[in-house]
Image (cartoon, rainbow, N blue to C red; front, top):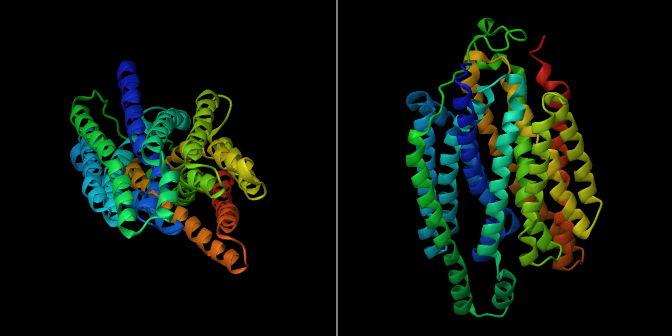
Length: 436
């Protein structure tokens, strides 16, 4: 690891925080996009959560190519390319909205996800090894604050732009003939065009500006943390079980985080809350995360180790999941939002624990950890599929559709139990496997 001057170090923190802000904004508008896409494309619950899948599956497909790209062009140029690719993805929303084609929307989201993959593959290991590994979680927590503040703003802004009047539109759709229905849906779909044009322009400008950003050059050395692992004795990335368990823990964590943020609006609507009120619910989750990130910055590593923070987070996740399922109404919604508390320090804690002692293998390991973001592509649609199945079963038992959807949406949060159990295992035992 190479540390530059203190001023360059602080400047790098600010610049990378800005990048986390950008992909936080783009990622967390999915909470508003899911009910919006469900309405304009007349989708099932499972189909609507493909919005999350299209974004997060790109991390599986593009993480290793992104790592190769960064090795060729460097962090700074790679970040610039990532921002420009995100801008191209935003522009795809224009023809997608004009034709109201769900597949085209998903392609645009995937392209944006590709750009974010490049950014994440560069930014996460960069900020982890920018300072001492023991305080890596603290730095990533600072990045998390930037990420989730942006997510809150994006969720509120796009919730207002896309979901305002959606309840009225649904009522009109129910009583409209085919031509009137198509007209209403086309008008609603076109409401995304202007916001995404603005987003594309902003991303292109930032992509150009990042080329001149004063980022210090850093690399992970072969000597990092050799008190726990002698990297010179290792010949393959497969010789680090704590890394692979870290990839699994991140996979289920991202799935849990996306469920907490992206399902809460639709969940509130399923419980009878109006869309005009429910559009703020993702912000509840994100504000809970921001507050917990701030605690992490203060407490880690002086008062709280990264491992202990991870244990506490996993236990809270299990408790809040139990409370979601066993409460009703707005109380249950608040416990979904409270998952933000359980989720906040998981990502910051797992990265330094998983990268500890990897030395020359750090870049490849970082790409593998980025691939774990695919949990956001698989677990949320699984939740949606479980909701659909449970709803169908309840309707067959004579329960009306509204009550069936509410009950199925609540009970299906059980999918989070195994996610937090895996994280707890990693916190207690998994990250220590190579510490002998």
